[in-house]
Length: 259
Image (tube, rainbow, N blue to C red; front, side, top):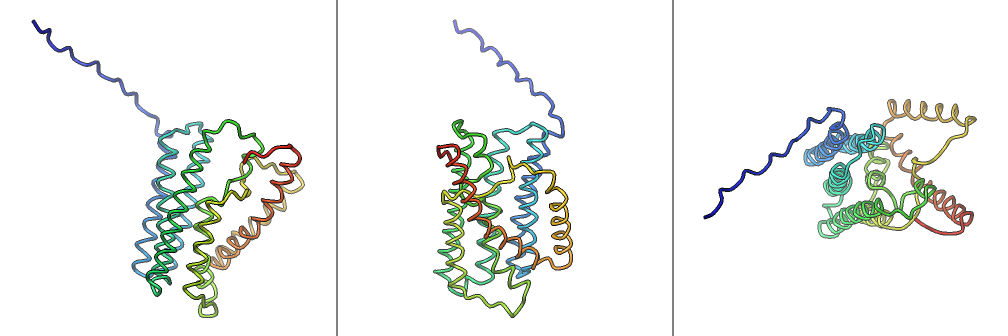
């Protein structure tokens, strides 16, 4: 005689503190901001479209910092962050640039958009796998392996930001923009060591000058936003050789290469 089915034990789900949801909320805000950039691109509102990507990058920086400060980083949060970054910094910037300039060279321009989006996804996938690598020394955490996705989005949007800053004085041909986006995608999937703020320490003598530089940048961002953002993107671009130099010097000091 068959025995009656026993009820499965109910899983007890504990209530989560609201602060534990904060990093994921910031990640979703970044995703929504990136998607909003696509909406503004369809409406040909280029100022708002670029600003939406900048806001998405700000939220992307905050979600990781908040998770580490509260010590509530999770696998779910990391996966959600990568999916959000793929859309906000891979799909959205490519679509904005396509609507702004690249659709005048439909097929060639769309190939550049696809390459950029695919490179962003590959860069994020590699970043996730490297999180599980326990052989990377502490000092190597001061460097990224390739250009990060938010920085890549900023570099991809640089021609548009220059056009917004200088108006008709800047005319960039669509084929050059397409090649530029492919090049930026290549930088993201490359193994070029790039500087990261994580792990860097500042000598006390440099604290005041750094505050002054930040204050000047914020002032310029308020008064001349597109010039300030273009300058920030160009500064980051010129910092790439510096990151490689500092990395190679550290490798020679440590005697091995890990990144």
